[in-house]
Image 1 (cartoon, rainbow, N blue to C red):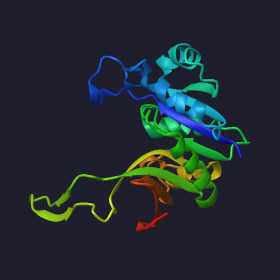
Image 2 (cartoon, rainbow, N blue to C red):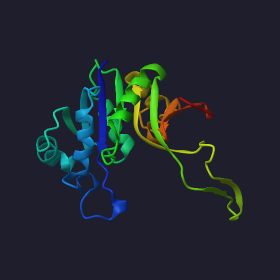
Image 3 (cartoon, rainbow, N blue to C red):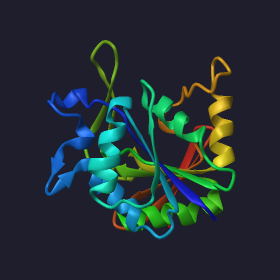
Length: 222
């Protein structure tokens, strides 16, 4: 089964207020983006990688990232769009017919593990879609517009989680969802982080499985 990873890295990282774009900031001995791509290069279940960057960074990424760090699985470096979802759609449009599973992972998330990549692929073959998430450790307060505390969640029961990455889907499912959620029938992604609300996995002393179907959710330990 052919698995292709889309790695969007076209953002400017403006929130960091750094002089250089976030994907190209050094982390130890190499840029953040190079660390991320290295994990995908090492994963035997990932067949190809499509790297999606800003138009003015294409040549730099080809020579100073892909070639310099010998990332052989990157077979295309393409220009993204103004938003992350636009960049993902640019990648979807050039997928080959033999692609069965699509993995989407942000280029500035370099700490994804081989275990997470492999479990995501294996579980998607059973569930149809997976999204990695991490448990919330903070105390969450639900506050009204009048600044009154309505609810407090300490997450002791493990029900709160932050969506993370990678996200992985069957190719036809992701493209169908892009069309279904479009408000102008131009395949304009309107839902957050390509989330199809199907199934999630997150790690906290092992992996847990969460089904989310039509906003009804329940949790059980794997």
